[in-house]
Amino acid sequence: MAFAPSDPAIDAVLTAHKILIAGGFGAGKTTLVSAISEVRPLLTEEPLSSASVGRDNLVGLPNKTTTTVALDFGRITISESLVLYLFGVPGQERFWFMWDELAYGALGAVVLADVRRLDDCFPSVNYFETRDLPFIVAVNCFDDAPRYDLAEIRLALDLDEDVPLVLCDARKQASVKNTLIRLIESIAAGNPATLTAQGRRLSIGR
Figure 1 (cartoon, rainbow, N blue to C red):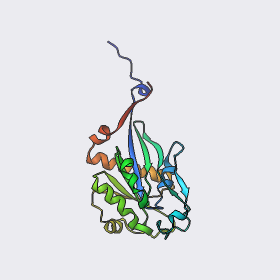
Figure 2 (cartoon, rainbow, N blue to C red):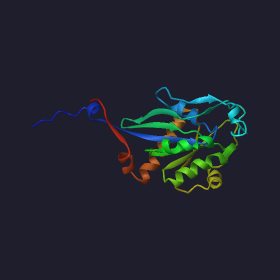
Figure 3 (cartoon, rainbow, N blue to C red):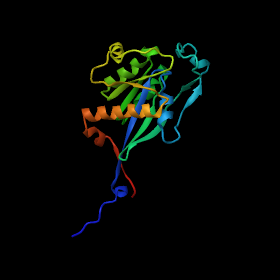
Figure 4 (cartoon, helix red, strand yellow):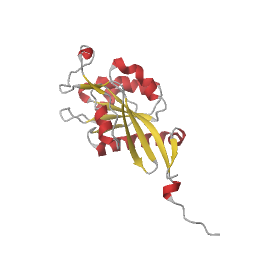
């Protein structure tokens, strides 16, 4: 009995995952989501106002004029079978109450670090460590930031050896995509079944 060849457009199955983009105030989360999203990103940026005076640390951020007050959202197709939904979480302490809701159902996270304000990413690192959610730390390469060896940054952040630490330019699509792929590779290496178990499977072409 003869069988007709399968149609990839029909047989392909897309697995979608939720990824968090975290980090301190001004670390570049909105920039990262905007740079990589293949759809028009949903951004909830508002101008800094008097409410931020004395509450948001602007040291080292002379050009910072806006802040995310809810979330950033974008989508990127990594391959024919994998799409990532990106949720940028607000960095300021007064918005931390939203993290649990945004983290629900997430596969993993990218923590953006700014070496000029390295302490700002500690809350995000602690949050994901406490909840046993896989994450990587991506050092955002700001033009005016000093350059440090990754081993020095790992030591300063007291990161476990199994937590990937990479360089990333949040303005550049290719750099952001490489960072996301590194996160997925890390998750797959630790628990391959997680990618399927937590993914939402969507039929293509039906």
